[in-house]
Amino acid sequence: MLQQLFSPSVLHTLDLIGIFVFAISGALLAVRKNFDVFGIAVLSEITALGGGLFRDLIIGAVPPAAFTDLGYFVTPLLATVLVFFLHPHVERIQSAVNIFDAAGLGLFCVVGTTKAYDYGLGLTASACLGLATAVGGGVLRDVLANEVPSLLRWDRDLYAVPAIVGAA
Image 1 (cartoon, helix red, strand yellow):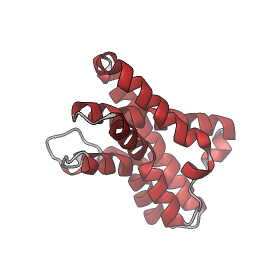
Image 2: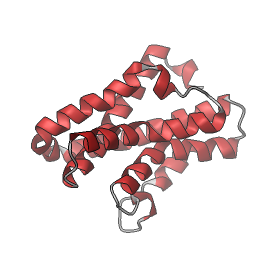
Image 3: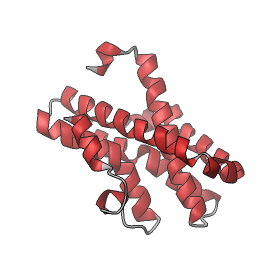
């Protein structure tokens, strides 16, 4: 469906932007938790790619896109370098990062739902997998950082509800 609206290069660019923003989110949490540079890179990668990896493995799209496109692997590393050297400046633009994070959440939800549907899943299963694509990396990030996942907290901003509405 999205393939009909956008060219493959536009979709790839949007994917990389979403990956970059999610990677910044993971890297910033790692800095706040005093992780070393390797820990920052791991949290950045898992936040950016975790949901898509999960989706691709579930639907049988193997090897997952994250392992077949070098840009998917390198983009979180660029975010890691940026946050490692400039984290006080990146922290100051946190509200802008949150806006892009929300856009990435919506984008990944739609892309995940569409890809699952294209692989033959029904509407309900596709919407659920779209949700998992969108929030999966954040849940993995929180677990690795020894945090209660934001997805499960009532005192945090709504996260899953807008994503599942978008998937529907």
